[in-house]
Image 1: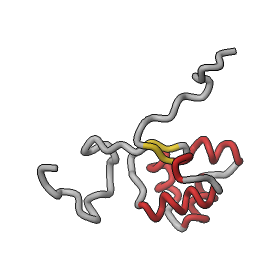
Image 2: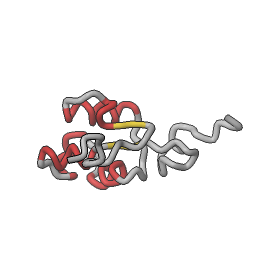
Image 3: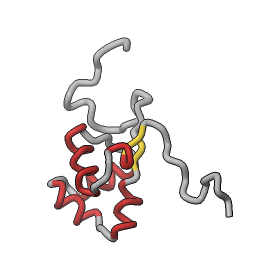
Image 4: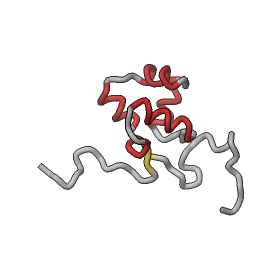
Length: 96
C-alpha cells in the first residue's frame, strides 16, 4: 500500500515479510506419493533446496512455479497453496 518495495527480484525471500504468507501442502503431497525433494526439484527444474524453502514457507513461488507444482501433482493450485493455514490432519470435525 504505502510503497512499491516489492519488485520482481525483491519479491523473493521470506514469504511473511509483508504479512503475505503463502501456505502450502507440498511436503504432504510429496509424502503421500513417495516423492523425494530431489525428484520434485528435477521435475520442476529448480534446485532441491528450493523445494525445502517452499515447504517451510521461507520462499513464495512465482505464479508460474505454483502452477507447475499443481500440474505436477495433478491437482488444482488451491489444493497445494492457500492464503490461510490448512487445517491440520486429524483435526477435522469428524473426531473418531
